[in-house]
Image 1 (tube, rainbow, N blue to C red):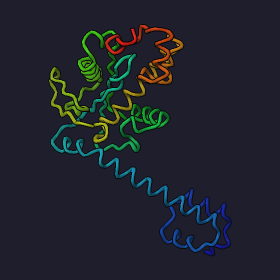
Image 2 (image 1 turned 90 degrees about the vertical axis):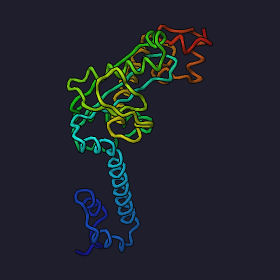
Image 3 (image 1 turned 180 degrees about the horizontal axis):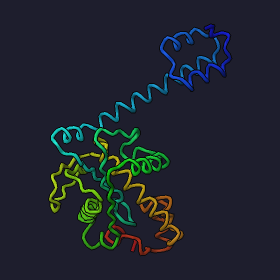
Image 4 (image 1 turned 120 degrees about the horizontal axis):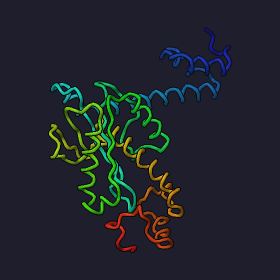
Length: 255
């Protein structure tokens, strides 16, 4: 095949529709058209990104594979969203995924764009064996403090799983009240796919709730800052006062 006789559009289609061989890519490197070189460079960057993503995904299964090899079949990952905001609930999720399943792109929810979190949220729900979500509102947070409220939301998440886990990987927290073997993992949402998946479910669930609350309590901007202590949020409190959604134990200086 004389590549120089092919149009750039034809070459682009060859690269897009097929998995080009290394021989073809090397041959294309001799093409003097800059547009062809850009196509080759773009393809190589894409494959390198895919390789890094796969490597990252493999790293995130380290804890899970150890437990699967020990005979645990239904490992659940737990994480929360909303410990730090001035308003709104704390939300926790427990996610059980099939053994050896890799969901490309799953990572600590804080590292992902909102659009990516939404996309992964749907994929996680589609492929999960079981998911449970726990929600503890601001009044309960004020009553028992945020640490205990977080644990309560996590316990709810486990008990609301249709299929219960036989082992728990938890982001930095122990749930002593649950008779399930467990391992708290510091920074777990960056070390375990299951915990990272739970962080995505919890984050998207809470963000959607805060968006709905923004309509109930207009003027606070809950759909934008999600209740966190931003300059916009502080200004709204100073102007409007505290809403029923605010955590009084977090906002005493604004009262």
